[in-house]
Image 1: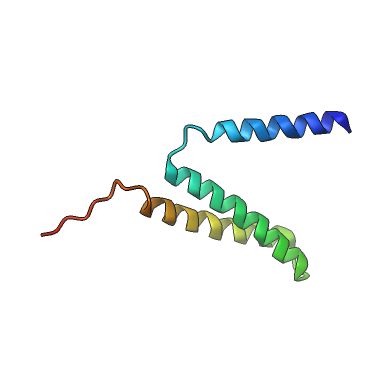
Image 2 (image 1 turned 120 degrees about the vertical axis):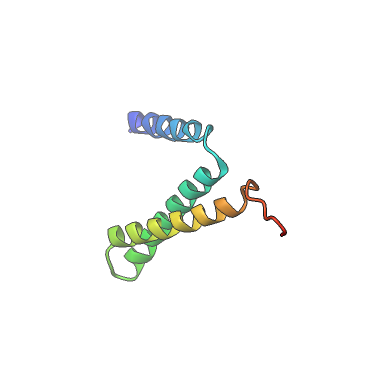
Length: 82
């Protein structure tokens, strides 16, 4: 059981450090996808459906939502008044 614990810590650390060079939009897309996949799997399992299908659909919806929200909060898009 001990090697599994070390492997889990190593994977989580590598995943966290791998996000350091991402833009805000990339981070929100990834976060939205991960949260959506987790929520979709949970709802799919609780409702009696397939957790895998719930994870795929929730992940896609979460990633799309994160992409849209990350694009709006970026600040690089300025509106011109003509």
